[in-house]
Length: 468
Ligand code: HEM
Image 1 (cartoon, rainbow, N blue to C red):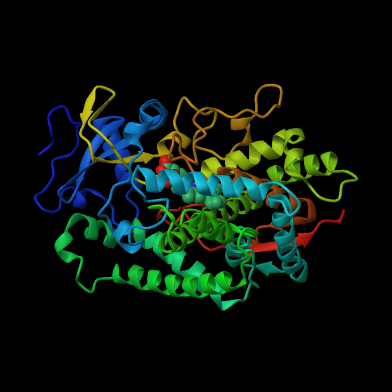
Image 2 (cartoon, rainbow, N blue to C red):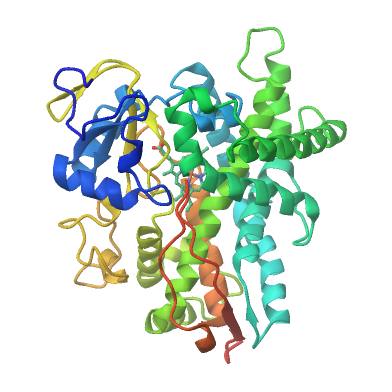
């Protein structure tokens, strides 16, 4: 039963709730259908649990920004919470554990962006490995999936652990495999069943695979953390793990939220959040750039002109590259990489657009409905960088550009992700042409659904540009 003045929604079955209203492989179309019937704020039931779905810029901004702290919680007792054993920052509920770890992660990321071995240098250093790989395949057709996962993973590994891994290394292959698999399992049909009917949780159903993957990742992480503990010099941190261990030391005499278990959870969270998102955005980007070759050419013209005589591109150069900026933002808009954000929950009884929402209600901000909202974009349903260019050809960012979500839980890696996307795409487009292999038929833009949307595996022909 819906509480009084609760957002409307479809009638629910006992036990199953509205499970049967949702397509198992990809419920995004069903969510859109329900929005058409019930409006921008509606509810449905995941088993016995009521869920509020937020659609469109107005509702999402009002909840996540205007009523920020009311909506800044995370639901607990879901499949994803059980797989992460309650550690880490992404799924931590609103409170001291989350607040301290978020602040710590932001400060540490910011500190690594400064100084000699800055984030830009790390990204360029890692990019060299990708460039070498592409040069080896000049004129050939290759599958970019692993390459983009490797580059994103290695950049965050350098920040977290102060080391990178060769592209064939088993450690990183295994971690990336477990995480990408879990990203699909976590929003999938078996997870929905797990969340809806607690009685099935102990059964040997396919969701067990996610728990096995977590065990594998934890075993690998424990080995690495022990190694790093042996090597560290207290007070002279080289990476995120060193900084965290210094923090544990500093607070040894108090009751602290900084523990070794949390260190592992946080490092794994940052690795997952920093890899699967950036790599899938890059994959979507190159898929569109191959298919819209006039856009690719115009990027290259701007890059050649602005970077003439310069060895490497810097993040500052983006201010002189309105078209490149527009393309990257448009890629993020159509990629819709984290379509349902990370689920939120209310931290107290509250109101939204005239409805009553009790404390502890699960809330899903449907970011897809903002990124393609009619009235917010010049071309909501097509790939068109003009969405981010004004009549003078200058770059501008509409308020509905929200791929990182908004408010206090907004993506904490936004700065790093934006730097990666700009430096990687600009450097690669300066050096290579990316060509869709004719023999592969027409490109398929339909993504595979999960916590992150992933383009279907595709191939690309890489050709050194004549100017290189
Ligand atoms: C294109 C790349 C990325 C996209 C589209 C993206 C998107 C998002 C979104 C939509 C959320 C959920 C925000 C909310 O709950 O309202 C999120 C959270 C988060 N992201 Fe990202 N992200 C990206 C890259 C990164 C990177 C590189 C890192 C790591 C350095 C990262 C770390 C996190 C963390 C830790 C959270 C949880 C924040 C919290 O709960 O307070 N993300 N991200």
